[in-house]
Image (cartoon, rainbow, N blue to C red):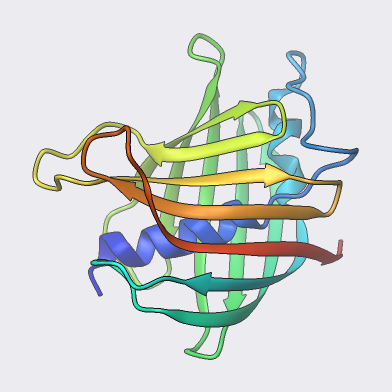
Length: 181
């Protein structure tokens, strides 16, 4: 599995572990945009299913996730530890709010090494969408992770790819529930 795909998997697990403080996703607080991603902090239980695509094989998996997060100036940082049947994984994710673009620049640093993955997170109501910061001409497919909040401690997520940016194929989807702070 390529380091890019590993980073996307870790990123999708982190993204899926988002929670909310009230029904749906947290509102975009202009005075404190970092509060929108502060909902990462805590322990999560995930059950997901992968589908047979050119990038994935059909399977089901249960994952336990612990996010230890804190704010530092204009940054929000989460260290994520993932426990899954195939073995443990960890990454650090750095969030930086762009007031001009009204989105977060994200940087995922995998504990296995390699270059950081730079992505973008946009938030619209109860939908959080993660994607690449800019298209990579050497990779013809675009990737995104969609999260829809259905309460303060529950998320439905999908990891998808597209060759044209219009028609998306789901490689994995799942449900996450908060199990502790």
